[in-house]
Amino acid sequence: MTRLIDLDDDTITENTRASFPLEYIENAIPEKQAGHPENIILLTCDASGVMPPIARLTPDQALYHFISGYTSKVAGTEIGLGQEPEITFSTCFGAPFMVHHPNYYADLLRRRITRYNVNCWLLNTGWVGG
Image (cartoon, rainbow, N blue to C red; front, side, top):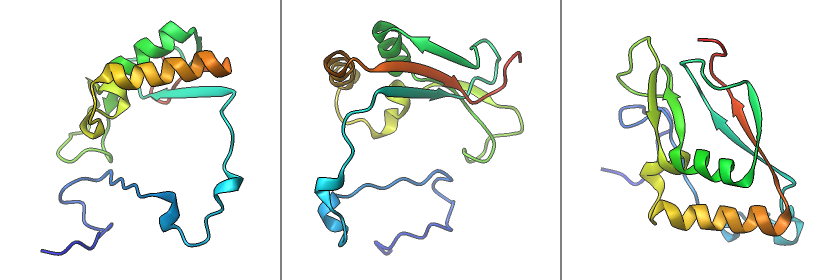
């Protein structure tokens, strides 16, 4: 066993993710970080075709979609998935990676949407019309 990451090994997942503190990046310039966004775009892959291509959301709608995490598993991103997409829900669009209760993340998002008057959007990257 090794602690080295092999990004060519897809035996555990085809969708590898990692994170680390900014100070681990030698040439990082913390003062050059961007401010708060004017827009937040939630991505969903709707394989059933019931969602519109794009929708502007109210803050409450954005929180609903964020917590429900409606999407589809598609070939190329999931091991063992056949040709047909599989509709699923992944809380906060990343349930396996969330260490706190979903309401914790939803409250963080709500406070920032409200504080910075952020426009919220839902973008369907899947099939429109089925």
